[in-house]
Length: 255
Image 1 (cartoon, rainbow, N blue to C red):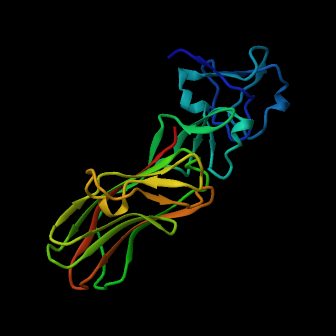
Image 2: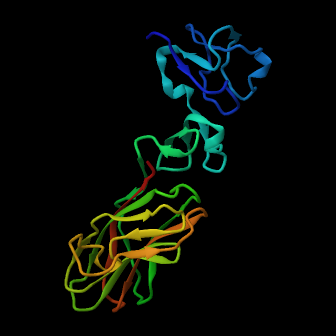
Image 3: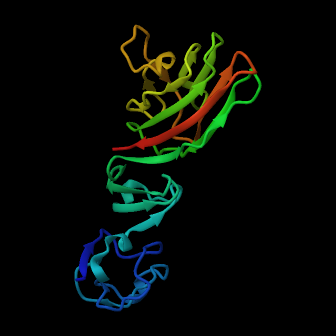
């Protein structure tokens, strides 16, 4: 495969992912001395004259030129222009891009977690957490959203079973059901509304219906600039009945 050139705003630095061997014609070009390229940028064979910051990769594999970070070590958007792979957001990490003013997900969304391994509430009448995860502070941004889809099964009886989706201390879905055996949540989307501390979503009590309702929207004031726990919970009026979280999908939307 032919080599291809990928141009970056900066020269290779520590954390860059470069080929372990630059054989086959790959090289890093830049108007810098070799000593000015950080030692942590592995696989650099040499520096010659050429376009500053361009990287020529054997086989043209652009993935090898993507810098990797954790969310905590990701540079400020104002200090970085280009793509970055964030290893701890998403079930297999996620690709982000900075335009010099803000970070956004490439493609606009990523799956944070998904499972179809059933988890059942115990023989109690108190609220129980069936799944939880931490949403990293700042990852939603002022206009991002979390989309949560769930599938529950319950005992078909007149006793109340309550299924909740909570971010921080706020229940953004709280569906109380009785004479049904299966409940699939029409994706409940928790949206930041121009502020990291202001949310809006479909009425919490109608989360499993997805139809028009006379109920008011549900709002929240959770500070998503800080780490928050997203939890899916269940609660039964009768301890001996069944309430099971059969499946869930949690997505981060960050255009």
